[in-house]
Image (tube, rainbow, N blue to C red; front, side, top):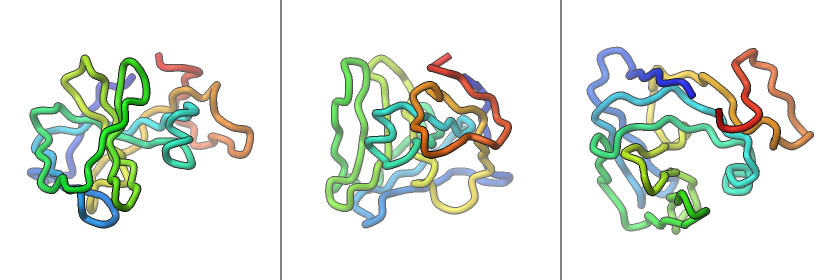
Length: 140
């Protein structure tokens, strides 16, 4: 996976949140470029492939958490979402010092770009990946 990190030019931090505002956060640190995951779990959670950046846990501050709910989706990880509006927001491994943040939950311009597609062997037959960005059959 790409280790590339970025922040929009001149940006000190990024903010984000859910559709209803019951989950809000800010990131005071670099974000990894966006990874598009095509695995069946991500598709079930979002209705399509899951696009996320990621940041160090220490750089993420939760500003509003009244709607935040965590779901243990496997023995290794959990997914964070808003229990009020249903917005998919986070994915994190239990043994990691980082948290994945859905790209769509970030506010405004981010300066981020998709850097790779993962689990493309699991993608459905109803769309094609044609952007020319590196693809991996599974997590590489």
